[in-house]
Image (tube, rainbow, N blue to C red; front, top):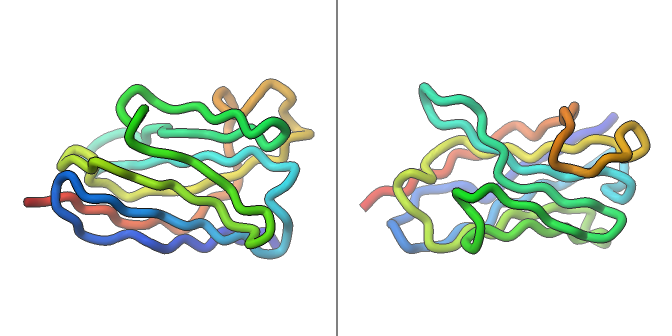
Length: 126
């Protein structure tokens, strides 16, 4: 059974950093697109970043470009989102998600992800 277990959220001050983890079990991340999303109260879910597993090409939303970094450790079977220079507007629940690459050969950005982590709360407050 495919499972994604998230960890690493918390409360930080503006300018600080956090790293979110997304540990996969029941399968290996190789062969899967990886995405990170967030949703703030009263707002729509926002796509932040994704990673093509074939060539490790990463894509970022403008809102996080230059501050967030997506990565994957195939040995640990875990994905990460490194978040630097955090701002109060980054406060949200963050989700990792995956989609089997063979089902969608067009890259990680424009697809519907079908397996999700449980979410990690990130609060950025002075």
